[in-house]
Image (cartoon, rainbow, N blue to C red):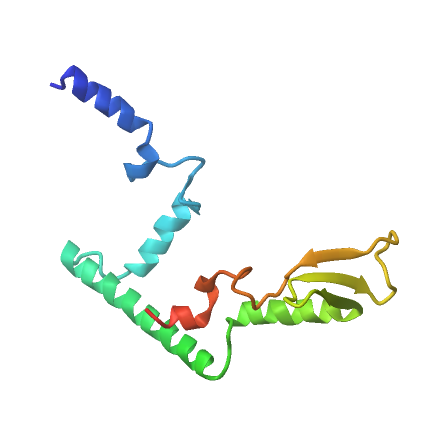
Length: 156
């Protein structure tokens, strides 16, 4: 039997059930993963070890995750040692953006270089206006979170 305080506490917890209830889904998804896809993924991960005790399954999944992260860390360190600051997808995106910006001319205003006027090769924008913005430097830590740098990834 629950007391009145216990019932009140339980009702309050039910409002937050998505934080604690493992079987609670909204729209067929939990944490942005479709529930059926998540279950199928776990079935593929644990294929062949379902008969093991829980401790064995936990050790197996830890070993698989550990080998994955050791492999990824080695690849990241090798790329960083070869001078890559960003991962391959980000480097490809930045190369593409640099190609698109060939027809733009940036003039720095002021000694600190944080204020620019960007002009197209024609001298103005399509409506005749000039464009300007402050300090858009993709290598600046001000605009790029340091978490995305490989040098910080390697400090694990």
